[in-house]
Image (cartoon, rainbow, N blue to C red; front, side, top):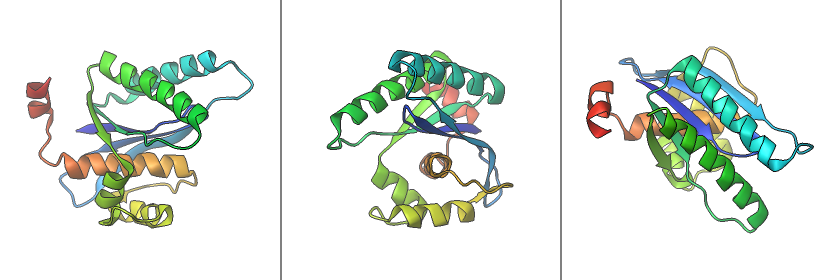
Length: 168
C-alpha cells in the first residue's frame, strides 16, 4: 500500500510518499517541500498547490492520503490560509479516490515517539529510526510529512488495498 502524507501549509507543504512493507521498516519513496511565493496572489498559490497535488498523485499513484488536522492558533490569518490550502489538498485526494486519514499533532507524536507531548526535536530524531530513508532530508516540513505517513501506517496497520476498496 502507498500513502501520500502531507504537512499542510500555503507557503511550504511537506510531501512524502511511503510504501507499506512486510519488513520491520516501511520505505520512503519520495519526499519534498513544495513552496509557493508570497509575491503571487493567494488564489494563484492555491492553484499551484492543487496542480502539484495532481502531479504527485498521478506520478506516484498512492491509495491513501494522510494529512495533519489543524489546531487553532492565535494567528487567525495563518490558520485560515492553511485551512484553504488543506481544502485544496483534500479535494485533490478525494477527486482521485484516495482514502483520507487525518491525524492531530498529539496522535502523530504518540505514533512516532510514544508520548503525545513530545518535542518537535523528539519527533524529528525518531523519524529516520522508523522508516527506510535512502537520502537524508534537511527540511522540517518533509520530516513532518514523513511523521504523518508513519502515523498512518501505525494506526491503519490492517489496511490493505483489498479492504480499502471495501471502505469506499
